[in-house]
Length: 485
Image (cartoon, rainbow, N blue to C red; front, side):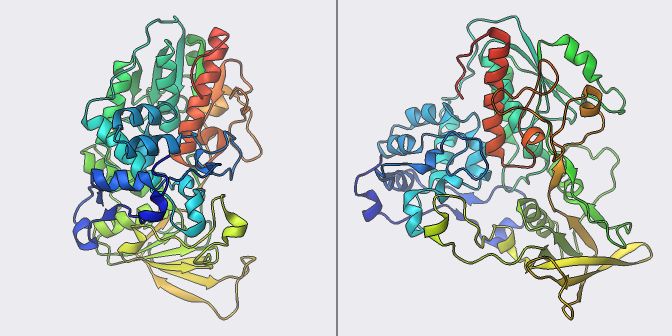
């Protein structure tokens, strides 16, 4: 597990970013990787801590410490320290189909639960993970894993986000014929159309899709399943054609802000704004949609999470005059109480790379009204709130705003179309009801995983659920499974 005294001898040293002035000029990734020596030194810091909470517990319960996909972190750290990168890649891929995704965009609950985080010096696990998989791609180690024996069973996967991709890859490796149906022009789901290129360039998805196609996965693009769009596929007919169906779409219904002035132009959901820019970067047409651009405008982002940060970074790169981010929650503490929180994910002040590019952040703020001129938004009326979200008299203020982006999260998957047609049961939050034991829905041979089942969550949880769902489908089809969890 690294060097026995490494954590005493070597300081934590993580990847750096390009200067703000430079990175705002384009939409490319701006993280500067560590050298091989520095990465091996950081891996050497992994101590023989006895109980490595970074692994995770194998539980799917919310708030579980450590890695949701149960990466064998001390093991791959030791392999990197020893210079055995190819074996480190094999180890990493044994639990995670797409470490190049998580190595870029995961918030790293593993680092929060690292024993060295008791002293605010966790091992740079995310950086090491990313270095392993990038080296594996550069050296050609990631070959297609083609099933030696075909089962003759056919599985449809609806949605090609991280849950769908993970399920599809695992099922193909088990020997099943897998068809992925994606309503958009390319695979990736939120990875492609929600997460900006400056956080993850889309060629990273493309090379993994190419690997999956070589393994026998067939992708059907521009194929909506359910709904009334021209050419939409009837879900009932699809279910008849396949031996099993996995519902792995996202939680796409956004949380709205129904206050006076909401009808004014210039107020948009984040997921109307972000995909446009991703399509511009990749040269994909907008299909007649009106441009939503931040250039030269005062931009207000309502919502303090990762999607809000993505809106900030995109707005600055488009040339926004100013960006203000509003969060209804109170400002979190600068530092957590380790004795209370560790090894769980702590609530504390975090500043994303996009927020550090110049955004003004306001906490404990409620927007009460949009104001406009000639049908276009020009101002927000706001008020400070207490810890019960009740307005505090005398704290009212206004903000100039020519573009407002609603980034307050997602409430559940879209119900119209696919889900209503299939008639699958929903849980009390409006997500597809499916057991954690077997991921089966209320309909025979129809399974569900990822955000469509659990609600808005992390990419790493989507990968975990996709893998577990594939195991359940394989068991359902074959009576047993050799797929790993």
